[in-house]
Every structure is written in structure tokens, then in C-alpha cells.
Image (cartoon, rainbow, N blue to C red; front, side):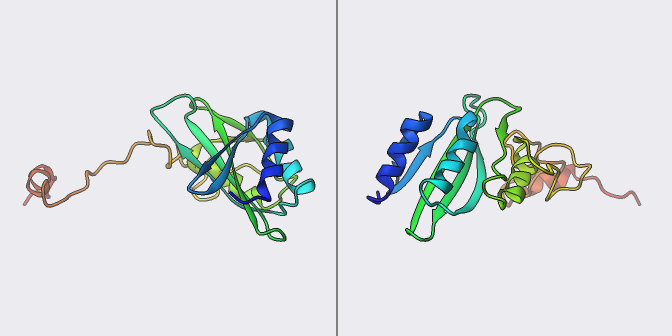
Amino acid sequence: MHAQLEPVLTDLEQQFGASQSEFRGQARLLVAPQHILAAANALRDQHGFEMLAALSAVDYWPERTPRFHAVYEFKSLAKNLRLEVRVPLDGDDPELESITSVYPNADWHERELWDMFGLRIQNHPDLRRILMPADWTGHPLRKDYPLGYEEVQFSFNFEEIEARKPRPKE
């Protein structure tokens, strides 16, 4: 872990009850959902993380607690630091506070979280679908999202699927 990250991690642990870990040499911080906005403010204003580089999510279904992790990647270009912040979210209808007031580029990232994973973002300025059509039902990156009508055909199941396929009548 980078030595310059130690005071940042310690400060966020004390302020927000966050817990730190390390994965493959990269620092990772686990923050409760109610503290993400304040933690983002602290990262930008007190510790110089001037950029939200990425925002995504992970679905751990069928586990219910926590089912999702919202994954933020903050960068400090001046200090050449990177910090991953994860926010665990329980259940099928999780909510998360918007950080667009701190990092304006979170706008489209948060819309993508809503569209693909169904994570509701509270206080988002314009929460609507960004990748799927407006009338689409469901959130396609959830692990319990139905995959569709047609079974994928491989060499091992080719004959079985061919025998069941509907054909036009002569």
C-alpha cells in the first residue's frame, strides 16, 4: 500500500467508521451507505482526491446481505494516488445518496447504476435510464435478470436444440 494513503484511510476510519482492507496491493475502504456523501466530500476537500475516475457495482446474488457493492474509484492526480471505496447495500431495492454535488461527473455514472443494477440514487438531479430504452422493464446486470427466450446453442447441445426449434410448415 502507498504510504501517502495511510493518513487518508485512518482519517476516514475515524470520521465515518469505515474499514480498510487491501486487495492485490490496492487499498480498499468499506463505507456505510449513509456516509458516502460526507466521505466523498472529505476525500475531495481534505485529502485532494480531485477526480471520480469510475463508479460501478457488483451483484453478489443470491446473497442478500450485502447483495450489492457500489464501487467508487477516486484519484488524486497531484499525489498520484488511487483509492477504491465500496458501499455495501442490502436487499432487492437498495438506495444510495448521490454524490453529484461533490463530483459532477457522477451524474451519468449514477444513472448507469440505476439503469443496469437498479440501485436507486437519492437526490440525483435527473435519475432516468441512460443505456436502455425508457420503457425497458428490469435491470439487465442483476444476476437474477431473466436471460431471454432462446437457449444458447453449442456443439454439445446442437442436436437437442435443433430438434425443438419451430420451423415453418410447407
